[in-house]
Image (tube, rainbow, N blue to C red; front, side, top):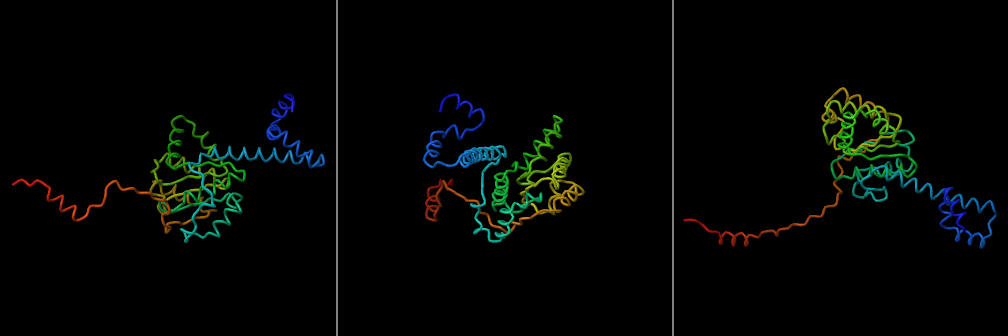
Length: 266
């Protein structure tokens, strides 16, 4: 390949063809495909490269702390979960097609963040724009947006994600103004895009951190119009633990020797 052709291919964005020119030409000479088939194969390779780069870019922009996929979720440890229903929802992507909200409720360590992240990653891999944010971080940026008068811009951005995962809802208390902004965000996303929420609190407890019974009722009324609830309250903790003790367990003999060596003032 001469430099002129190389520059032209790079300018057009045909990076696969540029990097694999000699291999592609050798295969064409060996297999002698039709012109139509030859062009189809080149276009398919370029398309595959471009879509993969776009997928990786969407994953990066989603700010997911840890990429977790459904294949690694330990269903054998969480027997209370309806595995068939979970996988049907996941594989069909019906939660995206129907703009359905997913609510994961359960104690710390039960796997709700991992499972919800798998749904987020799957949707992004299939072409959707997504974003992961911790609830406390969400409150922080909502508060900052009030200070610099950028809340409308922030709301538009957060509302535009085709799938938004809000992790550990209720972990932080909301001030009245922030609760109103959070409600506004959920109102904008209602029936427009999918929202995934993880929380340790049941619906009846949401009024505690939102500190507004009317706003809570209005929020739940919208969320429960079309949602799937993963009730993981009775699921066990599956978080791996590695504990190293820096002290040895003291025996009764050790305790006696320790007492014998103590100085007692008469």
